[in-house]
Length: 90
Image (tube, rainbow, N blue to C red):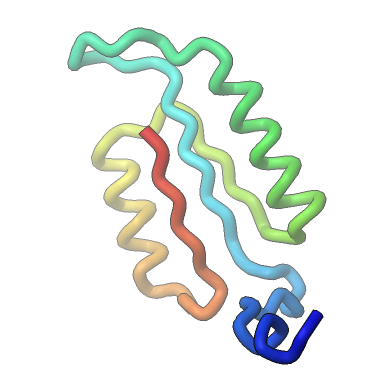
């Protein structure tokens, strides 16, 4: 790897690398949205990827309400963001 590519890479030398929060909303009580069949398998695969292969501490939450999500995000706003990555998927 040349020097320019090495310098632009995100350092991945912490142990653990960071924290990974996976929100897996499968069932919805309002809004007319259908159950997300298969999302449990997706969440498990993400948990394995981030936990076992990428060395993150993983927290998996299922069927989180708006209030629970807001509370969890408020908690994380006070954490060290030098090891923080956010991915949202609809």
